[in-house]
Length: 170
Image (cartoon, rainbow, N blue to C red; front, side, top):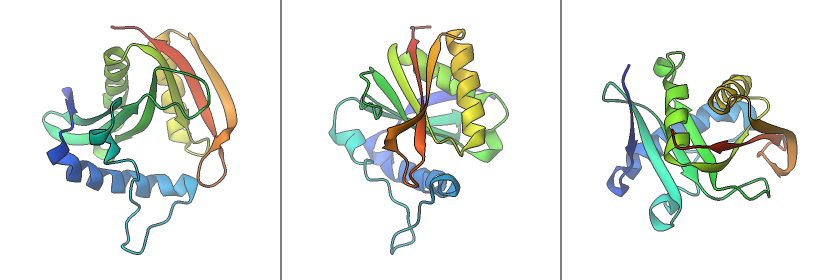
């Protein structure tokens, strides 16, 4: 599969909103998220990706087809100053286990060199394994893992696990 990171234009926001609903539904098994009166999870910061600086959203495309998305910003959640934060990252099921997620993550890290923070939910075991493996490989083991950051918990009260590392332009 050939991966392409495609910056999302404002007129494509509804496509991202639709994918976010799938992502948030899947994530609800870990954080206990529920839908609103309209049957939607909603994403409070979606519009901010086109109204504020330092927020970037990308479609992940595999062989020209939508395969997921990634959202990056410079708003660290852990209280420690970093240059970039992986806000959201989603690869749809048919595209998992093909190396697409790793390739997309590496491409994003290369695109945004600097210090990174990456927070993940400890109950999301596939994510725990994915991010630990990908960041370890990308940095050749040069990263710091901070388990149980209770300063910025998830909706279910679980403390986020945080990885800190430096991305160098590839």
